[in-house]
Structures are given as structure tokens and as C-alpha cells.
Image (cartoon, rainbow, N blue to C red; front, side):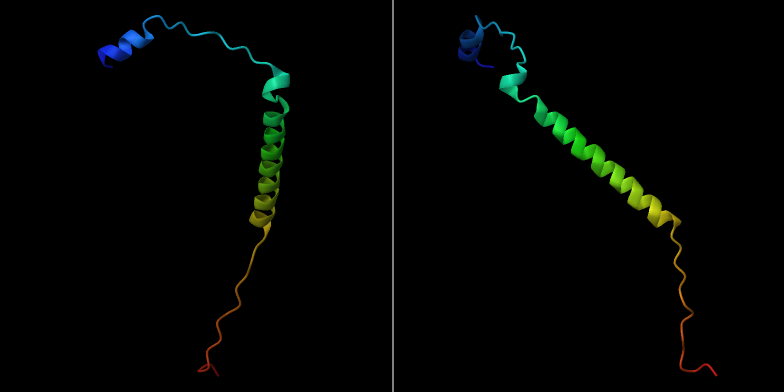
Length: 66
């Protein structure tokens, strides 16, 4: 920092900011968490179904077989 900047902030005292649910929108993070947990549950369900599914490939046909 330059000397001017140090002089500018020498008397600075940070103030404590309190969280107010009404002003800060307390429900928004809860809604996001609900969406993320639901998404995670659906992914686990889909991955679980895919892991139990077995796919079999048919033998490759060749025109030279008799």
C-alpha cells in the first residue's frame, strides 16, 4: 500500500453487521438446498436403475457366415 492509502484507512474501524432474516431473504438458501437435495436423490435413483440394467449385444452378423 502506498502512504496515501495507509493514511486514508488509519482511523477505519469495521462495524459489525447483523443478519436480519426479513431483509436478507432467509428462505432463498433453504429453497436452493431443497432443490439440490431433490436433484441429488433423483440422480442416485437414476444411477441405481442404470447399474441394475444389463444390456446384451447381439452377435455381429457377417455376410460370409454359412
